[in-house]
Image (cartoon, rainbow, N blue to C red):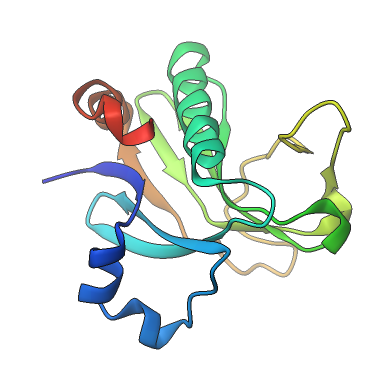
Amino acid sequence: MTMFSIRFLHRHEVKQRRLVSHWHEPADSAFGEIVLGDFKETFISSLSYWRQAQYLAQWRRSLNSLLKSGKPSYLIVSIDQPELNLAMFVWPIFVFSKRLIFQNRLILPEDIKYSVSELEPKIAQFEYQEADEDGNRFSEWEVGREDLAHFLEEQPGVLD
């Protein structure tokens, strides 16, 4: 059983799963999928600012950095052009020894810093929180550090 993966879906998978009938996929977007243990979620990524290759490169950098440094990281799954002033969707990853905790977060435009010289935006480093300021618990998924390493070793072409 795959404990961790992240990828874009092929057109035939989108049609087979009938995702387009649920979300009318615009031409400037792509469907993706993240697997975290027994949890699987389909997401839609905007292609108005980044292309699939840029998402894949960010995922690869982020995952490799986390494994090498042991510091928290994040996967950007949807980002729009800065001038649209829209939110960004990310999966922060927190490190607890050999366990990795994933959360799904929406980053508001005022918390995103764009640079003319860099395509990847800067967002404030995430602090691990179990709940928001109102006490509502964040949804979390746990994956072993070795599962992430296994994904990068066994599926090297997935993030290319």
